[in-house]
Length: 171
Image 1 (cartoon, helix red, strand yellow):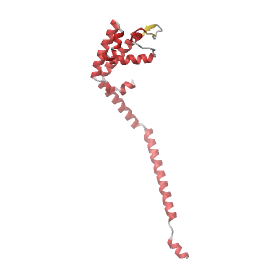
Image 2 (cartoon, rainbow, N blue to C red):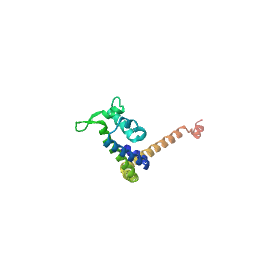
Image 3 (cartoon, rainbow, N blue to C red):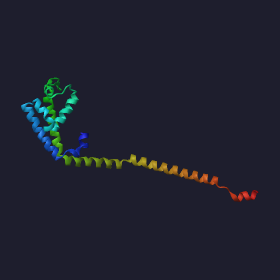
Image 4 (cartoon, rainbow, N blue to C red):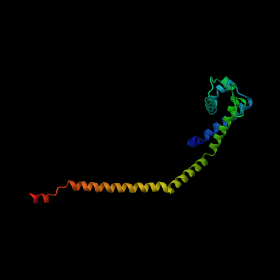
């Protein structure tokens, strides 16, 4: 969620259109099945799906992830049952793409709420006594030290001054 909020400005109407096309294509692949040729052309035709597929392949650390192998890989799902990786991936990809579409649709609202939270935190910090008390303590310590320095410099200056009148009387 934090990474999404950091990249909130990337959720534009163009990304929404691309995500909607990707969702419809992923649902079509889910219903009709996919071929190795579909996977090989995925990078050019639907880069969002391809990017998610690469991330999932890296997460599962598959060896030799060719298009044919990706369609045949089996994984163990949360229920402990064997499931084809491709079917699992399509469910995850459709969920992620729908989430992306939702963020694109609600981009301005999210930014407003995010700013409200930032402003609220800033006001709480400004009203918090601890930082201002620490600042006051530091300021007092600084002025006390500065006063001591000035007294020391004055004393040093007085020590270097030679009293000419008292020297003439002694001679």
